[in-house]
Picture 1 (cartoon, helix red, strand yellow):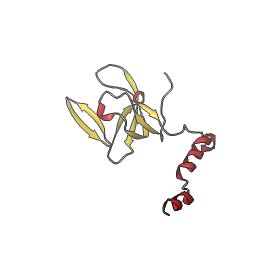
Picture 2 (tube, one colour):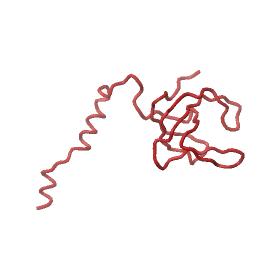
Picture 3 (tube, helix red, strand yellow):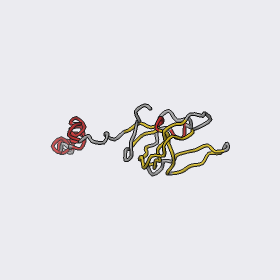
Picture 4 (spheres, helix red, strand yellow):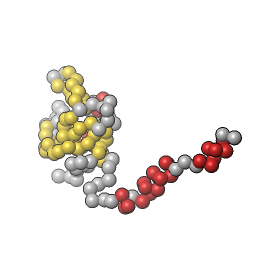
Length: 117
């Protein structure tokens, strides 16, 4: 079996989805479902139980020709990409991300005061 894209607790984004409504959802991986038949193929895909992490997002499923939506449901690992650091990594190991966050939030009060004059 190939290496999985995600693990329990990760934030992930849905990619390459068969239903365009599912593309780009941000989800939290809740638990492993395991290998499960998916779609119209007989392939068994490793699947996670996911919860949508955004207020307006939903997971969509096609059942008997009808679309249903849910905030929590199964998503194959194949359609997920981790967006949180892997377990075991400390934020210190991503030194550039901390610096970017600090620069983004820094406000130059001197230049703002000068603009008001």
